Image 1 (spheres, one colour):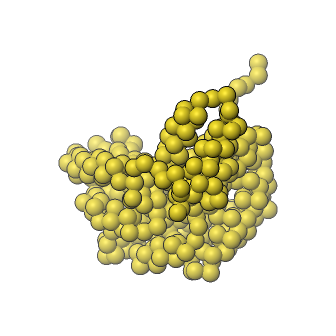
Image 2 (tube, rainbow over the protein chains, first blue to last red):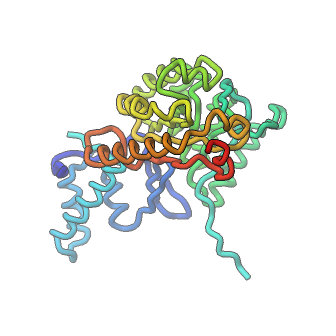
Image 3 (cartoon, each protein chain N blue to C red):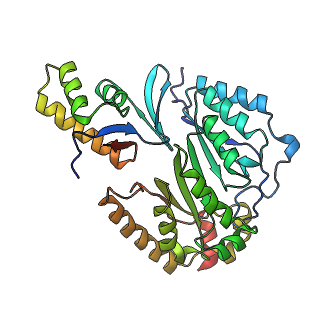
Length: 92
Length: 245
């Protein structure tokens, strides 16, 4: 199912950011994901205030040297992965 | 020579060996640690601090029944305050709405609720207590809170044919994860293995059902459940399995 570009991703209940050994991590039941660079920048924007489209645009600006299409694809892929894990809810 | 063992990521905190249930499959040691030997609130708080400093990310509150601790809310607060992600592994007893709200407010992240069956009669028989109705009540209360919820169904010969019903309970709840956990044959479970070990045929049927269920969940993003269901597929240890032929 394609992600709605106008939806607002938000960390699912019981999923939150944490810090450990100076590293940001995404914490959820029996799992933790290390967040580095782009993954951190994406997750930080999953606050229910940014649309998927806005997150893509923000990261395309940050990573201006990268191909915009590739950035969009990678972000959509990453968000879809987290959606499957029930780490993200998508609100309208 | 310097050691390069990586730090542990989870701390399993057996807060107590007391429990209001008397499950015939309990893996607690037959010789339980008495209440006087339990670690104090202060000691646990120190342990949580040291754990975070050692790089631990998560605390699993378990037992016995962690809710049997009168200081459970303080313990949740202490663990969360130390920087740990807090999991509560519980039967849902003793608990009321106010206590659940207080646990969430103190920083509880994840509530894992056990089920002894899909139906009241068998569940209460297995747990040796009138517990099933309370668990269903807890499921309703959980809908009002923003925490992660997992349902853990403990599987053995007496309820392995109820998997479909169990999945139904999970799908009509707010849980995003469900675990079908075959009894691990230690402690009481080993003592009762003659009555609990599923037959090979039952086990194969259950694995087939779970495989199909996982496929169905994988293709259905509308389901509340993650398709990454965890299963302890095989009753263990292997040398106990010999008893059931």
